[in-house]
Structure formats: structure tokens, C-alpha cells
Image 1 (cartoon, helix red, strand yellow):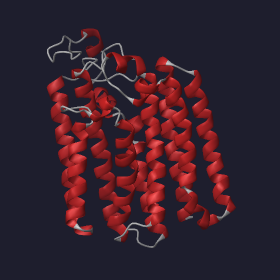
Image 2 (image 1 turned 135 degrees about the vertical axis):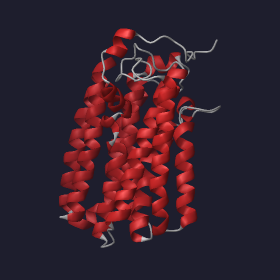
Image 3 (image 1 turned 45 degrees about the vertical axis):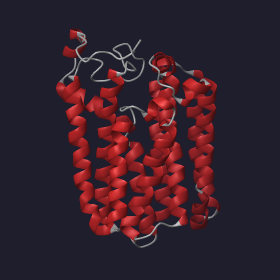
Image 4 (image 1 turned 90 degrees about the horizontal axis):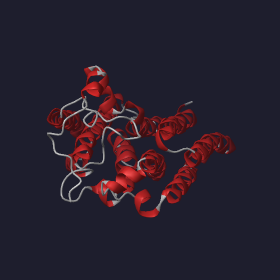
Length: 309
């Protein structure tokens, strides 16, 4: 039997009436997770600054593309997770706008497409800053991945590919492309840092998947946490954090031992957050999600301090 909820499903009037339209859209955009798209651009721009190749206009365009693409993905996930039954009005995570009855399903789908279109329009202006075929290819990949993450005959998030997608689209691709449109090349240091930021963004997904494990399993969403268990998810969180620090080794050459002192401070924040992830459950993990996003900002700002100041 299908677990999809029909689009005509009644929405809880009391819930829908309790939230203003502005708050509903802000909630749907999930601003607490936008560190995953903003930080890679900031980090890559700091690397470009260090190499004396920083260019404001392409950096700003990359930031717009990255944030708009993530918002489009968040809106798309809100819609398709509702359709597939992964989101209901009884979810333990942050409330979803469609499942809560705040925004009509078709309105959410249109908003996702419009936001993705805006991201692609901004991306067209980047064609002047590099190989247009390479940049067009990246744009097509982003445009396809946004809906394919939770939609289509093979939704990636439902088949256990979410972690790989996040590593690529919130780490490797945005960091390398942002640096490329400013410097005209991609260095080994840029590649290492891109993997580090991708791993930290994977941790945002892991917190979500640990929190929603039971509901995801019931909806047929086979995340890595559903497949291998909660302990696997919490252990992978720590592994990703430690690997992110290890991948940051090129930064050692900028400030020597001082670099590792800063990254040890960052790792201390991650260890505290990991401890909370292990001991908390249900809606209490929403706080851990916020702390994980904060940790990405901490990493990025520490990196910027090493590269710029």
C-alpha cells in the first residue's frame, strides 16, 4: 500500500490559522540550515582573497545562487516529503509548511520552481567568469538535483544517497566553483577545504536523519541512519567532524601551529554537539541541528581569520 498522502488531504485548521503567511514562508525556507550553502562561498572567497584573486561580483553571484538553490531545495523537499508521507502534522522536527497546512501544496511547488529559476538566472551571469560549458554543466546538475533529491522515480534521499549529494552540492561543487570564477583555476587547497565543508554539511543531514529515523522508516525513506541504525548515524557525525579537521591540513602552512590550535577549538565545539546528539532524542534534537549549523559558521570564520587577517 502506498504511503503517499493525497494532495487533497485536509489540513488542520487550528494549525494553519496560527501562523502568519510571512512566518510560514520563512519556516519553509529553513533559514537555520542556510549555513550549508553560505559558508562554502565565504570560505572559497577567503581562499581567493589569500591568493590575491578575490572578485566581489562573481563571489556575490555565487552566494545568491547557492542560497537560492538551497531554499528551492528546501521548498521542494517540503512538498515532496508531504506527498510521500514522510512529513505529517505530527513530525518531531521543525514544522513543515505543507504538512502543517500553512501553505497549499501546489503553491509550495510553484514557489520552489520560481526560486530555482531565480538561482539559474543569477547563475547565467557567472558565464562571463569562466568556461561557459563547465559552468552550464554545473548549473544543469544543480537544477536536476534539486527536484531529484526527493522526487521522481528514484528520489535520491529515499535511496540512501542524501549524504553523497550533500557532500557534493554543499561542499565540493560550491567551494570549487566559487574559487574558480574568481581565480580561473582550482587549487589542491581549495579541493581539500571543499571536502571539509561538505563533511560538516553532511552532519546537518545526519542530525535530521537521526531525529526522524522512525518516521522515515515508516515512509520508506531509506536513509543511511534507517539502514544502519542510530548508533551508526551518531558515530558518522563524529567521523565527519574529525575528517573535516584532517582535510583542513593545508591551512597549517598559513599560520603554523596556531592553525591547529584554532581547529582544536572548533573540534571542542563539535565534541560537545556530538555528545548532545548521542544523549538527546525527538524534538530535543532540533537544538542539536541549530548547533551543527553554528559549528559550520565557527569553522568558516576560523578559516577566514587564518586566510584574511
